[in-house]
Length: 203
Image (cartoon, rainbow, N blue to C red; front, top):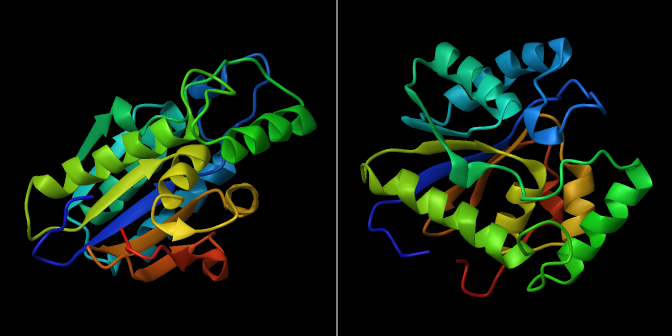
C-alpha cells in the first residue's frame, strides 16, 4: 500500500449473521433478524472512530449491514464489487467440507485451490479497495464492509497471523480498525487482537 502523509483510520468490517438457506447460493444470503439487530450495536461502536466514508460489498448481507451503519451514523453508502467475498462456487457444503477447503485456500496462498481466485489475489483485491476509499479525501477515515475470507486475506498482507484460526474466530459482525500508514490497531470487535503481529514493514 502506498504511504500516505496524513494518518488515517480504516475499519475493515465483516457483515452481521446471515439467515442460512442451504438452497440459496451464499452470495445471495440476507441477514437474519438477530443479525440485523446486531448491526445497531456495531454502528454505535464505530461512531467513535469518526468515519466519513462508507463502502460495502454488493452482497445483500453486507449491504444490509452497511445500511444500518449508514442510517445510524449519517453516512452516504456506496457499494463496490471489489469487496465481495472470495469468488467460489455457490454450492452449499457441510461445515467440515467447507472448513477443509478454506484451510487449503489459506495454506496455498498463491494457488487457485478453491473457487476462481487465490488467497493472494483476494487480499490484493481488498487492498485496492482500501486504497480507493482513502484516495477520495486525504482527511477522512473509512469503513469498508466485506466478508470473512476476504477480510482475513487482507489481514495476512499486513500482520503475521494463523489465517485459518483467525478466520474461524471472526464474529458476525466483526471489525478491525487500524491506522494507515502505521498499521496500529485502534479498535476491534469480534476479532482476537492477540493473534496479530505486524509484518516487518508494517505495510
